[in-house]
Every structure is written in structure tokens, then in C-alpha cells.
Amino acid sequence: MRLVDIGLAGNPFLSRGPVEAVLHLSVNNPNPYALTVANVTYSATVGSRRVAEGERNESVRIEPSAETLVKVPVRLQTDAFAAALREVIEARSLSYEFNGSVGLVAPVVGVVRIPFSRNGTIDPMDILRKKGIGFN
Image (cartoon, rainbow, N blue to C red):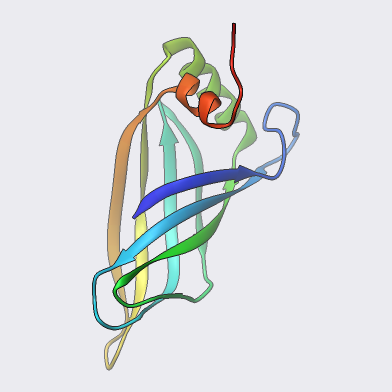
């Protein structure tokens, strides 16, 4: 699984409530058969701030022997997200962690939960460059 893009449906600095975002994930299925995801639970932390957590209960088919683009709606907590962005900008690099589990539909046994965890660092200047925003 890799993050392809993040789309925001609002400005976290101006919003008075949670901001909806969509994570565009590329999910690789090396198996010769399709997989069905029944649900996903997640939490996201940037720096020291938990910026999102939730659950998505919508079935998604992951194609066999291929990569499938999966869009996951995420609700960002505005205050925590804005504080995390300030930490990122001040630090010029900050750690992130994205944890959760995926419920896969398995024949006979039903839904099997598979945990996942991704972590790394965020470089805000790199994100802005990718969005076509530059500074002099």
C-alpha cells in the first residue's frame, strides 16, 4: 500500500469543524484472485498530534495480480490538524504514523482483520513543490 495523493474538501485553517479529506491509496494484490475489503479502521498521527481516527464500512474489491486505486475518506480534526501543520512548518520535517486494520472477506470464516502500520517523515516544502507551490 502506498499513498498516491491527498485531497482536501476544505481549508483546515479556516474551517470551524472537521475537514473531510480523501486518501488516494494504491493497493497491490499479488494474489491470483480478487480480495474484498469489508471495512477499514484507522488513526493518523502527525508529530505529537492525533489528527484523525475513524472507520469506513464500505466494501471495496482489490483486483487480482494488480494495483488498485482505493479512495478512503478521512475526517481530520481541525484543531489538531492545524497544530500538526504548525509543528511541521516549524520543524521542517516531522514524523507521521498511520495505523489501523483492514477487514478482508474470507470464505468460510467471514471477515478477517489484518493490521497495518505505516510511518515516516513529512517534508512540508516537498509537499508544496509537488502541488506546484513554490517560495522565493
